[in-house]
Image (cartoon, rainbow over all chains, first blue to last red):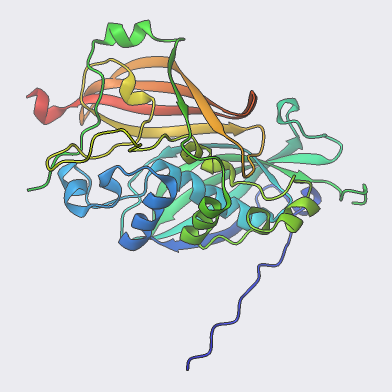
Length: 165
Length: 185
């Protein structure tokens, strides 16, 4: 009998506004984009457009191979940000452009870098005494190529719920 | 021989498309409410471990009303079913199933389209049990000739709501709709 792998629990870390500096990179989240993962992803996001999981139809459409769809790109960017900011932060905005296909067989790297710090916008519904806003460049890369580039805005807490910093 | 992947795009002229700028073009409602099994499978495929998406106690500890959906799942929460009881049975030779996104419904020339970019602002969290619906408006049509063909960039704004009328997110999706160069030749 093979012993089951121990369950690794993610520490419930939370990055606070004061922990962040302009220019800081966020840790890179990697994902090997296998055809199996694209098939599972289609079931998850329910965009069944065949160019995202059928090699012959992807090539017939002009793409080199099956590639990630828009809902998957959004989720990968959110997961990369969440892995960095931990359980407290709130996603306020994602704004990205697709530059190249995220092709089956690539090892995707989801990254980001803090570009500015400021008060939270009034329309986000968060108290600006308790929350600060962080803007980041964010991207998905495959090798030397940026496949997706954009910006993200997130809110990070300045203090805990009892007001302690 | 591979079948073609074709969006069932609404035919029309650029004037037809331009006449819709500022107008609501589609509404949609998700087939299922926000639910834990779908959230769990979203985490599974990306190997994404964040307790606010699976542990109610951890989510409440940071100010949520229980488990919260990943924000970007709002698009999927709003997709209708591909088949429902009463619809006809599938047959050989049927066109491929395509998601019910708003942009193919805009009458315009050209049969091909691709997503070029997307900006979404998130205003409220979605929780299991929430019903997500959307309203989409055409914001702009900008004619452009690219190497791949003649067409236009079109921006569609979709507002996502949870019951009764709480705005969850506003998405501005930019799509290029065009006639492929080899088709035009």
